Image (cartoon, rainbow, N blue to C red; front, side, top):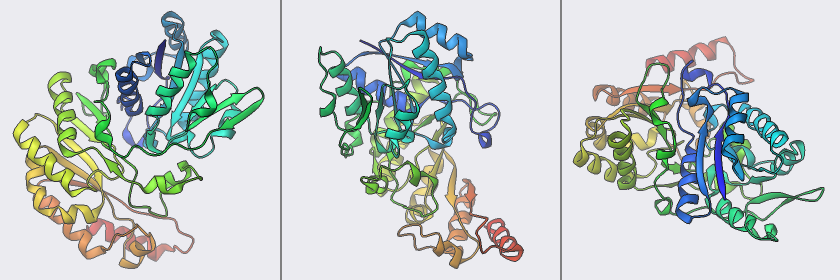
Length: 385
């Protein structure tokens, strides 16, 4: 059985710039898992990186003749819900040209309303329902069942499928507790020399080392991706260990020539031991790679002792959520157990700057109670950081 992971022709998220292309992290991890389990022969077709248009994508699919095609993403910032339109249009073209091809979609976008998505898109045969891309076991089991004369689809947890005219949603699948059990992402399947970051960074790629986010911030747009049957999955943060992350960085740098790396985790530095192990391993490996991550202020404050060392092993920039211009606004954001205010935020940002780590800050705007004075205060507070 041949499985083809497809990223169709589409642009990038506007804030990232006109030229921003990175490997699909879900495809890389899922392909590695399926290959390790020997559930299928796997290939990748990244139309964005290869510069293929819709007809060229279709020609390539017809040439390769896969039994199964997969579409999906685990990074909302790659285009949010707009990705779905691109995915489903591509699936429709493939189904019309090769009706025997089995079509599967999965990842973040298919978690909250899989039955509606399946009903609205008859070209989809299956949807994998999983928070933050935890669909490795579901995909492997589906592939194994599809090899059987009478597949027992009802026994596969986390699967949404068609039974005649009905759409069936199976019971949810539990989360993968230990991400270190997963194989290294299959970067060897991707055109790694084609990726470029933020319109200015060659030798670029992106990686995801964790799943979930302990923040549970009330404003986060990722809440709409959550399986309503168990929303706690969203806040169940799991991460690879620091040694595994360092090994992946070494692979990217030494084998594929990556020199600029963005960790797309929602909360890269949530685990103290991960960060300790990471900096110790990177100090040994002495890689030629600069990297950027997203993290929570309280965790950077917790790890202030590590920041000088992290800078020396390549951490050149971080993103921190400021979210307000006053202590009251920050508290109103309800960022989980976060207990910092404007003073603490200014302190950690200044400390990062003193250690030559630049910062990107995000804050909220446009509340019903906002007026000009509040917005100006918020802007002054953010600028003052």
